[in-house]
Length: 146
Image (cartoon, rainbow, N blue to C red; front, top):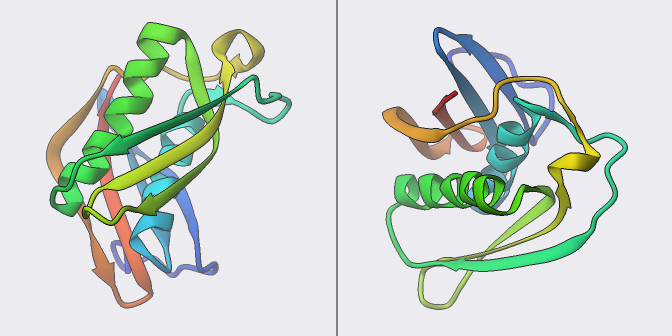
């Protein structure tokens, strides 16, 4: 349970007001679903992707690490591609790999095709990072520097 919040759905995410940065929370029945929800939450803090059409497929591998490293690595990749390519993910899918790492896939779209509705994140903060199993599956919370 995140901060005593009653969750009405098995899987989801939200942003939480926070000074000078943005805090996101995500949850799902399993770790990979939780990490994919965190990607969606990150994107929703600054972009309205409602009418966006996929333009390319993106796939990358994260090496084995602890759950916090995996979450930060995944979100860092989103921010890196945003900065270097001007792209952002739609419909992220995260799967465990045989080596203990993760494979992330998503369809991406250009930031030119979406409405920017908030400050674009610059980095993932390690302060108060939380990810792990909870009573309803998995949950995570992370702060984004904007």
